[in-house]
Image (cartoon, one colour):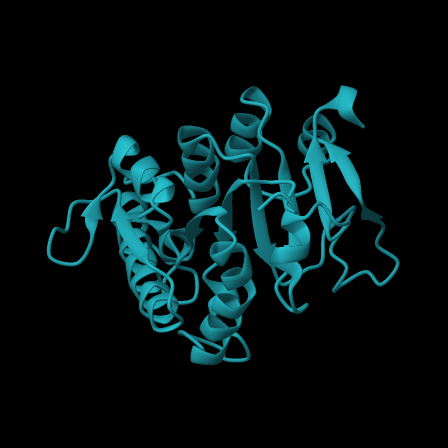
Length: 242
């Protein structure tokens, strides 16, 4: 474990990342890819927590935009994250990694209810701990849930795995000349409205000195390399650390 720069990490996975090449739902090969990527670090004793989104199944904002009550739509989105969390748990366990799912919404028959001290104990015992159902409250994204849980468990860093290989000044898919930031401050992210995470999540990380790393899932061994402190993706830090 001494080779690793970070000893406890929270990995944020978007629901869309679980789709792989599909247009909806869960791609089993993508789950297996994620499991392969995190297994070396898990076997080396790194504490790994995961927050997963639900956009591959249902996104609350989309439902609200279509005329649904926002709170009801967000509740549906939180339930979608539980489906994703259970699918990840099944894949991780089949790969030989002990895993627990903890839900912010009580559903005793499928997941443990989130309790901070119990979550930390799972991590200390070498169990990958997946936090589902966001914060348990509507109007808060899973980005904010990831920032909150990272702070609660005392993570060394919040790592956000996306389909883009870092933070850009504008959408690199639309603008081929978009500039990539290897390192950027929280203030600059908020000032430029860069959508690294939502503003609530970014501000929470800023206030609690929680660094954010953004990288692409498409590269093999990227999670392991990121944990070792290798320059993958982009990192958000405080101004005086730039």
